[in-house]
Amino acid sequence: MAEVKKQRWFGRTWGRICRYFRELRSELKKVVWSTPKQVLKNTLVVVACVLIVGVFVYVFDLVANTLITALIAAFN
Image (tube, rainbow, N blue to C red):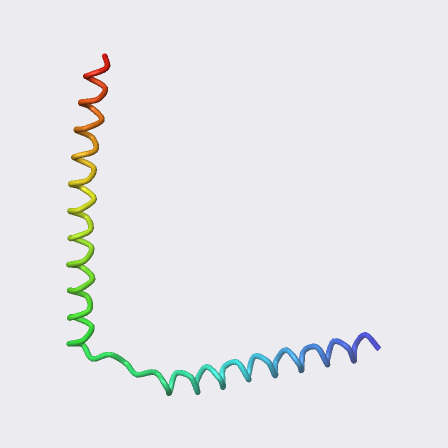
């Protein structure tokens, strides 16, 4: 009885694995891949946004640090 149950488990599991890869292959056929030109353009946009946000955070940190230092100096 246990041997039959193991065989059924293996069969079900193997069937699920096969179905997963069939569905994966089917979904990958639907993917629209970007051209190298689009990838470069998107990469440059991301780098520019990161730099802009980085500068903003740096300036905010500099101003906040200056204000906090001035407040500490004023109350000491």
